[in-house]
Length: 163
Image (tube, rainbow, N blue to C red; front, side, top):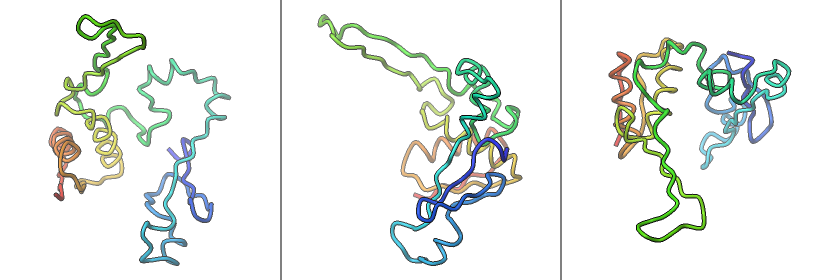
């Protein structure tokens, strides 16, 4: 997984390999332990040039469920549920009124917990599964918490949701 992306500190620019779990730059967060917002937040840098050199196209990325960009190594780590690939509806009028712009509605109510949040929860769960993490903790007052709980239940993982 280390060659898919790296992390870079938004404060000092130091880079970190993606094989280890990082949340903040250890140097910047240690130098500013009580900073709000936190110092040393990491951003993800993708190696798009490597993908181009390998000849990976957008259609191949889609066909492979974006696995070349996601922090997951094996599709088998994802929950055995139908997540994503939901209907996209195009409307050219509302009621009897014609629209002079493109209007689309994505129907993510077809996901397991009826939310678009299932997409992210599936990746979090798969990442944790590959790292041997059996419990995932999140803060949520709504769909993110119920989504994570549902996905974790399907994966045999424990979800703790702080409200």
